[in-house]
Length: 188
Length: 188
DNA sequence: CTGTATTTTCAGAAATTTTTGAAAATTCTA
DNA sequence: TAGAATTTTCAAAAATTTCTGAAAATACAG
Image (cartoon, each protein chain N blue to C red):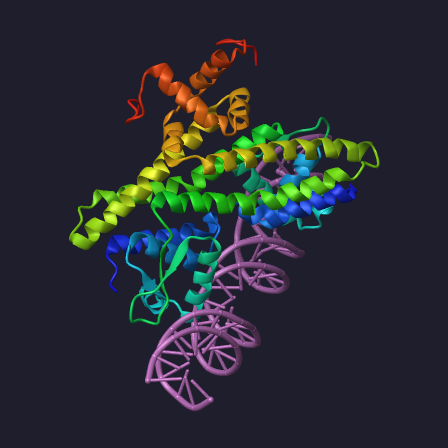
């Protein structure tokens, strides 16, 4: 398997960005390779193309499976496991988005929820709890919103994303349509 | 400076989550401490409260300033530099969101743009470019959308986030208002 | 079963990132 | 301008993460 120089560049870049996106360099590279190459690849091919060890590929594939970003395939007459990117680019993006929401938001929400269960012992702790509550409210809202977005049909999601500053106008439109004059929203 | 046990837990958690949010453990802890404590703190106080070295605090503060998450203050009659979280919880969240967009999306967009400038040399490269283009289109749209969201007034942003599944309905409403045809059951 | 093909595991090595702390640089006061 | 207070720098140490490769485990064909 020889990689074109653009594929090389694409793969190396995703390796470098990997840590910012939530996985390590070689996992990022494997993901990039499987995304740019639509052909399924087996572990040996991945190891050879990326010049990394067989063991590393095995671990990386496990990680990518835990992110639900790759799919196991079997080719007729070949006992090896083959892998492809799980779905279209949009599917992959949605999956990364969902997994990151889970990993970046959920643990924090549950810690904050726990902290808020304890009655504050003094003035100081009461102040702190106010802040914790604010952080919680914000992250909770963000979490719900992220959930809503990732459940939206692709068509609607694209429409929404393309609205640009038209969003504000649309929100006004909604007020008119529902008769709300700008105070607290009735819907929770 | 003695930390309550809930402050302790809050700080340690943000330290652990730090890497997922884009900074290292002690930077995460410093940010958490400055967020939960509304009082400005100087570098020595931070070092003492978090039990980390003075040098580490200095570097961490520089990092937090580059994220625009802390503000330098001066107290009358004290030569030391004091720091506070830069704004309300909402301001902070918006800033983190913007900075992450810059760091996670922009470098990739510019690489992909470059790759797309080169004419494909063969069938293989042409196929790859199709994928690269798809990734580019998606990330570009996402980037614009993130931009739009972070420019929205807080009031509107909250309204939008609270819409939940009402978003789809609102998008339909928009179609009606602008005369676009294809109400409830348009084909996918 | 037996033997071969394939994948997984994991201890240690290598690479990378973070942290320390002392020295250097800077800023301010008198 | 001297010198004290404060902050920054950065080389080296420590901690953490990633990667390798050989051995163990698993899966399968005959």
